[in-house]
Every structure is written in structure tokens, then in C-alpha cells.
Length: 195
Image 1 (cartoon, rainbow, N blue to C red):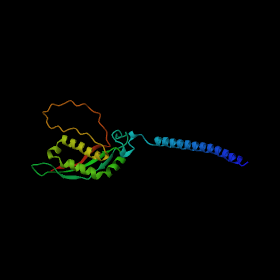
Image 2 (image 1 turned 90 degrees about the vertical axis):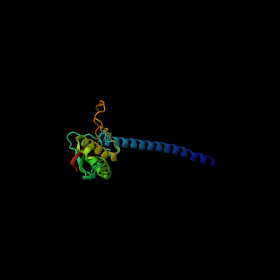
Image 3 (image 1 turned 180 degrees about the vertical axis):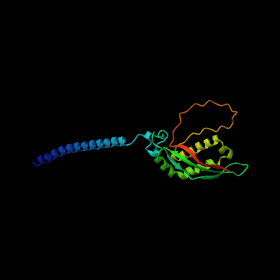
Image 4 (image 1 turned 90 degrees about the horizontal axis):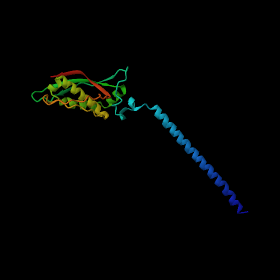
């Protein structure tokens, strides 16, 4: 009878092991299903990247168009007074710009980068001459350069066209590109004095 007792205890242990294995498999399946359900809910809740809601992590290039019926947001920048790079005389410029941005979230983001943006704009302005700044083409080029400097802290590099230096050079036909939209859609001059 002593040998019968060990066999009796071994049989219930084997049956309990199968129950534990089934229980572990069921728990693992429940965890996987809950995880999959949570992932689906997060994907449904998150807006698509083209709506620009992911902030600085997106490139903003596709997401930067104004939505019809919504007014743009304007972000004024404190005025700049800079010495120009004219060699003949000492000249300076007083310039104040306002950035037109696509939404308030972009404006708030740009405010956090404002010291970097101001520094970049100051560098652009200080390398200009009075002749460059007084022509219409010069002002339009300056707008693009300021726009590029305001996008740089967001990790967006904006391509600038090379300035036309010689009018006599043969003109190449340019292919018309679809204009890209950026989170900073325009640069507006509020004050522009060159002395």
C-alpha cells in the first residue's frame, strides 16, 4: 500500500498542470486582444498626419495649408534695427515683420523658438545693402529669406531661388512648380525704413 500512495498523488498533479497551462494560454490571449483593441482605439483617435496635429514631429509641408473659412494667425516680431553692409557709408535699417502662420499651435511653437528665429533674421538683415533692400525684388527676396529663417528651428529647410545677378545672362525657362505650403505661409512687413 505504500506504493499506491505515490501514484495517487502523481495523478492529480498532472491534471493540475494541464489546467495551469490552459489558464496561462487564456490569460495570454486576453492580454493580446486587449492590446490590439487599445492600438485600434489609438489609431482611430489620432488624426491623420496631413491635418498637421502632430506638432513638431511632422514636416508641416503637407499640413500647412489654411483650411477654408478659418482666418490665419499672425505672429508679430519685435522690430529690428541693424547696420547694413554698405561699404561706402554707414547705413542702417529698421524693419518689423509679422509672420502669418497656419494655426495657433504653430504660433505657440514659434514663440518658443523666438530667440533662434530673431538671431537668424538679424543675420539675414545685417548682410544686406541698402540697394538690395530698396528694390521690390530685394524686398520679396528678403521675405523669402525671413520665412526660411523662421522655419529652420522647426527642422524645415526651405529652398531659395538664387538671386539674379546678371540680366545679360541667358534666361533659362523655369518649370513652374506647385508652390509648397509651409507652417509660416507669409512674411509681412509692418515697418521698413532704410537710412
